[in-house]
Amino acid sequence: MKSKTTLGIKLIALTLVFALLVPFIAACGGTKISYSGSSLADGQVGVEYTASVATATGADGITYALKDGDSLPAGLTLSSAGAISGVPTTAADAKSFTVVASTEGASAEASFSIKIKEADFAYEGGTVSTVVNQEANLSVATATGATGVTYTIKSGKLPEGLTFSNGLITGTPTTVSTAEIVVTATAGNLTPKDATWTVKVTLPRLEYSEVATENGMLGVYYTSLVNTATGSDNIKYSVAEGTTLPEGIQLTEDGLLYGIPAKRNNAEFGITASAEGFEPATATVKINVRAKLEAEGNGTISYTTHSMTAAMEDVLYVALSGEKSVATATADNYAVVSYKLAEGSTLPEGLTFYPNGAIYGTPTTRGTYKFTVVASADLCQDVSAEFSLRVKEPSVIYNKSIKLEKATVGVEYSADIATATTPNGAKVTYAVGVGTDLPLGLSLSADGKITGTPRQSARLVTFTVVASAEGYSDANCTVTMPVSDQETDIADGKMEIEYIDLTGISGAGYSGSAKEEAMVQNGANIGASNGYYLAYTHTANLTLTFKFKSSAAVTNAELHIGLGTELGNINLTTEHFGIYVKSTSVRSH
Image (cartoon, rainbow, N blue to C red; front, side, top):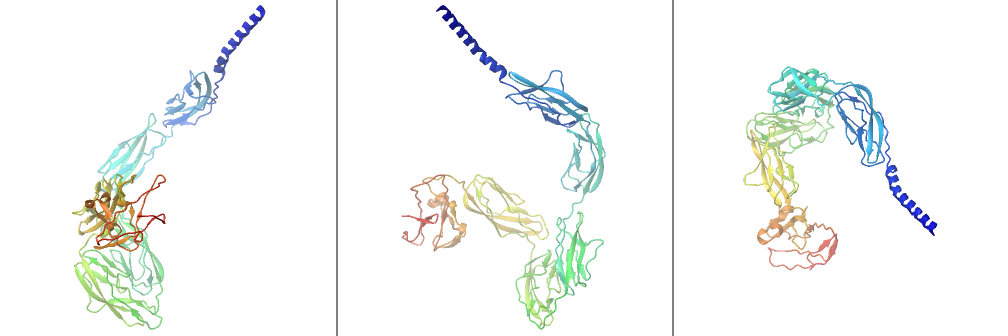
């Protein structure tokens, strides 16, 4: 019994010791970090450098540090996350160093190397240009091969009105001029670099590109406009140096080609647009001159009078061809028609009549002028037509009405209504007309931008915008825009009138008729939903579409429609109207 008892005790002791050893062995041998080195990307003196040595695996929370006694190239540092960064300061061949990756209970080492190359710091000059009397924003900060470069003027002076700040040239130059400056670029301990820059202040340049012209016919009077340059209000046109117009064609200084082509060909030449205070621009112009159409036997000319587009006093007027000109006669024998003013007829002072029916020029006196034009063609009898041309005061040209996109209460809104023009390109400004108001929360800038956040809903807001320009009478435009509430959850409440689709709907009533938005009336005094109600519904086959959105299926829904009449008592039954959901009729009572 004794021996057996002793044996049992020893076994128990061994078991206990074994149980204590197991966790100790796991802690020492369960974590193993794998880590290997490499050659890292080359660096350059004076240039920001970044690289990572955080490539160890096998554990979480690994940190990195240089092995005692090792170092990085001058200017670089190593973070505990394994990022190498900085600006190298000294060139060196590949420098090796050892990084220790460690975590609790384990670590590993790896060797890396970085080569630092000599600085490739370079700075070259050039030419920068800006325009007189316009805000400049030029940069000469173009040095390469280093970071943190600073720039200073070593010698020279900028044109009047310009200033220099660390490589940026800003300001508003006041005169056309050219200046030369020497700029020094400096970066850390690198040798500074100088560069010579030419700073030019030039006149603004006109915009003028290739011009489309009418085709011509040999021996037939020809007119075509080339006055499409932009950038100034007073542009003059001339034949470009080194080119010639087709034989028989001339050019007015305001851009009209006219005359009788003397040769069949595809002519190509240049037209130069010029204006005081601007650099001129030249465009290429082509005219295709083909053979004249010959009459095919005796014929008849068809020619009737029509309304002409009104002219403006002291504004260039153009009526070369088309339905608004006098050149609308046709000959049924295909002969070319020519035109002349009847004896005793005259145009307003300043306008010229051309044999192809073109009227062109700048009228000088207001009034309504009547004149007669005679149309002629080979083998045809002449036909006359009387025309009337009104010369009115110069005015801004603007839309009669503009309908804007819908705005939403509480949502930022913007729209551009700057579509007004003047014949000579004068600057147009915009303002809200007296006695009208924009929707609450919105404003109109002088350059025609409507911006802001609407604060109050309205089915349709109507206001007047006045477009003005110096030397022209104002033009008014009626602007309309709907402003709706944001979509909201509705339960057992009144539907808002703005959720009805009125597109293309016309209605009628005892007091008249209305269409689309005009059918919505102010009904705040009768308790209408959201202050508005739908009127003019007394019309046959009227269909109204309500838009509902639901986040879940709905049963036993009820739609209550309130109806009123100004026609007297009426009785409505399901025979008089129906309600449909997705084209399916639903019971109504």
